[in-house]
Structures are given as structure tokens and as C-alpha cells.
Length: 119
Image (tube, rainbow, N blue to C red; front, side, top):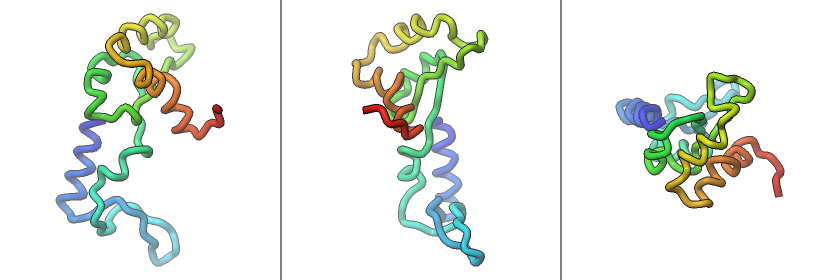
């Protein structure tokens, strides 16, 4: 994800462009190629999410990616992922993180991303 965000930033910067919506001649919205004073990174938060199954490096890099932009996935019932041992993998990966971050990664970010009503 950090590679992707850097590539988007570099692309927009090299062309003095941004990914801001604009109207085209036929009334549709276009996101690429419009000039803006906002850097591409401002459009990243809340719009780009990464999901992982067993990624210790990803958790170690969470500050670079953003704790609000990642979700743990079990990909149930596919056995080429952590299922049926997902709980053990999660406990190991999140052992050094606080409960607030664990909630975001395991549940909260997915609820927000999918706009689920979970009060």
C-alpha cells in the first residue's frame, strides 16, 4: 500500500495534477488529470483500504499505511489463508498492539468501509 500511495503521488506530482473530481463536457465526472492544490495523499484516507491475512510486516508498517486503512480478512472458507487458525494468527500479529488498534483492524475499519450500521 505504501508503494501504491507513492506511485499515485509521484504520478500526480510529475504532471502537476491531482485526483480531484471535475465535470467533463458530457456531464460525467473525471478524477484524473484535473489540477488541484491538494496532494493525492489527501484522497487516500477513507478511500483506500488494504486487507491482509497473515502479514507481520504489514502490521510492523501500520504507521506508514495508516491504522484506519487496513482490515484483517479470514477469506473463509479458503484453506490457503489463515482459516481455520485465524484466531491464533491474529493473536500473534496483534500481540504488541493496543486494544483500540486491534478493534480497528479486526472490525471497526471494515464496518466503516462497508458503511454497516453497527451501534
